[in-house]
Length: 163
Image 1 (cartoon, helix red, strand yellow):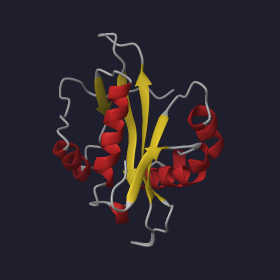
Image 2: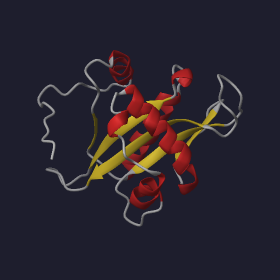
Image 3: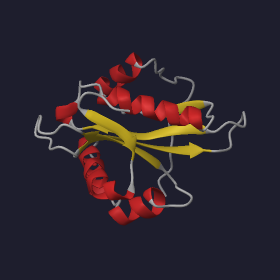
């Protein structure tokens, strides 16, 4: 999928370094950079070069260059998803683990384009639903997802045990 200034495509092995850089930016934004341990090797082994990937990634790549400090070919956004294959209705659930757009590229439509790529991918895998989490204080993200017809799930609370 291409727009006037970016191309949305599946991430490939050659993207590992740039993808990792964007992931670190998200970790900084969400205040867990001190716990972030993903490496390029992890991205390659667990997804980008794996026969049985644990995740799938989509990237937005600048195609025309030099605007807002972005050079032609730079990655400006990404989305990471994973599948839960077995669910109550025997259709997989797609989980959007991360969606991040560089600050200077927000409000350009790239987030919408990435979400559409994720939705199309989920449909191609015959998923019954797409789920994601949003930080309670990230009101801009909440507004973004509402514009995309996303609905807050109030029936469930997110819980976890740190092991």
